[in-house]
Length: 363
Image 1: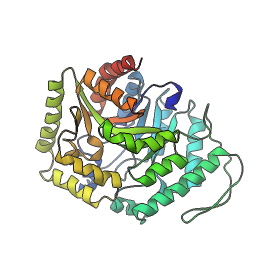
Image 2: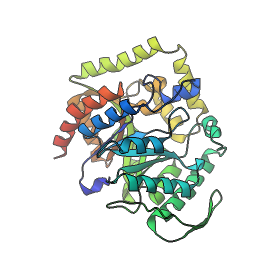
Image 3: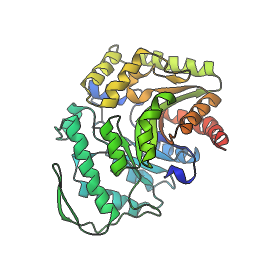
Image 4: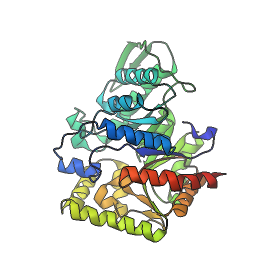
């Protein structure tokens, strides 16, 4: 998945999961009591459409309200041909040896370098404790560094792994199932988070720093150390593209109207509570953006207060949205994990109308 080999922007999408109207942050805050089962038929159709739309990879989320991402990704990968899966993992919740073993097994079952990782320390202490993780934000960051050091030790050499850290200890560690890849010794790894610790972790152990979107001029200084270290940078955001800017703005406004009409009246307040209870640096910082509906002519934060931090969106005509992606490319950003409303139709619209324009502009 390395960008710098072909110079093309990489576009990923969030896998269709559950009821699309609820943001993850609202679901957490309301503690929605709904059965969460894999919908293999619908999700397989979504994966096949992603392949058709030339989406590079699908992010498979991690939360208590969704099926296990490793098992779900494996089931979908076995029934598809080329789409990659970005498997979300919270580092403090399992043995790094076991996780490396699971990833290795995936790579032997599914050919074609189709497993990638999204490593995240966690952001919502209440949910972390569901899994037995009572560490503070800074402790989780340190734990993640140890977790990745052990995983990478298994992936980078075929010998015995020994590690004695504050959070993990491994003695004479061995894995007989190897990681199989056509070009990499380890899976391509996104490190998500807005803190300096996340940037350091990317430089030391990952491939790409993944953060929330902002206007290009505000990103230049923060991403430069990552680029100087030879790593990639990616953004989480949404896309609302229509044939005209007017139609796109109407779609954005209708999104909020429909949400207010169909969901609890205190939903906006609940998301605000989620932001306040969150200990993620990037999520707390991004909440301030909800005070201004537009961060630029095309970067819209109007959904942030209703749908959560990953819902900052590029809004405009197909040409305008494509041009906005090129502007990000010009400052060195090369990966995008996208979402839309509804997920499936938004991805199809992006693949049919925006992505071809991006490819033309790249030449």
